[in-house]
Amino acid sequence: LSPLACKNLLLFILSQFILALCLFAYLQPSRNQGPEPRAGNPSALTTQPGNSPTALQAGSELIILLWTWPFGHPVALQKCSELFGIRDCHITANRSWYHKANAVIVHHRDVCSSPEKLPQGLRSPSQHWIWFNLESPSHSPNLGFMDNLFNLTMSYRRDSDIFTPYGWLEVLSQPQNFSIPAKSKLVAWVISNWNPASRRVQYYEELKKYLHVDIYGSHHMPLPRDKHFSTLSQYKFYLAFENSLHEDYITEKLWNNALGSGAVPVVCGPSRENYERFLPPDAFIHINDFPNAQGLAQYLQELDKDPARYQRYFQWRTWLKPSERSFWAIHFCKACRALQMTETYQTRTSLAKWFH
Image (cartoon, one colour):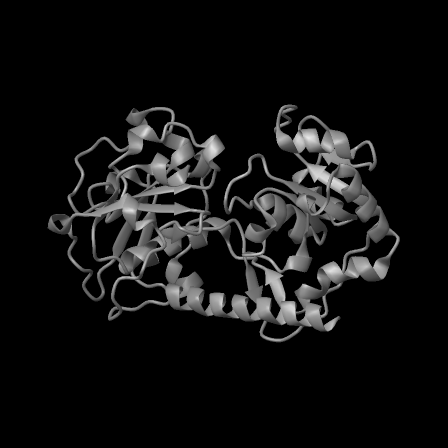
């Protein structure tokens, strides 16, 4: 490693260690700590002191109702105390608990088609509604009828009240020797929504003039779920192209498909600067690093012929690893933890103004 590369890696590891300490402190139960500062935009929030909920008493259980299963699919509801040491949380999808619930998590994509899909029963003055969304603004319609209903936001955006990213890096307690999976192929891409007008498809159409890409998905080669990682791990590079370009919108295309299978991500999404808030600079390749698709193709072909240069994209794995925690469980438990830390009752006046 060059002195500059060592310095960059050490600085990133230090920042991730600090982030891990913050996350650990965030997830630990505390009864004496005051309300946690939120990253939400203060100008978009109003506080209503008259509706301030009664502080939780020691030993009282916080009830969180999932108004719908995410995308209509039931998920495992593990106990937060077993996973993260967060006590006194009861998470349920049973709507008969609505009037008892301290908070209701509403998943945007499951209710956005009509206001009638929102909870219709009388609402306790102290009940928190949490707007939960992992889609980008381009795929989040009908935000208008949700104004002045929600108290907290929960999304992949770093300025959400409850930050729930698609993935993150964890600092290892000691260095590890990461074994790069055996590679026999060059570039893969999995895409389910093939839209010729989208930026990612247009970029691919130019890239394929100079580089062959194996494409999997509903309109291309099939990729069985049980063959997902074993197939993608054979490739040196993976096109982690997002369906739309928005701040912090970095999805499973990078965390799961690329990093999870041991391929180097080639990203099309927000700026490189935005990606570097989540990853070391040498953990990915950004299409904006090159003047055009031909330049990217030439660079990937150079790396294919130079094992030493290619292996540099894995050096960060000595001290860091992509999270392997249960995706939905940690989101819901973080919501519980946030509520335990919340003493004021606030209302998001305009979701659209904040999210777009």
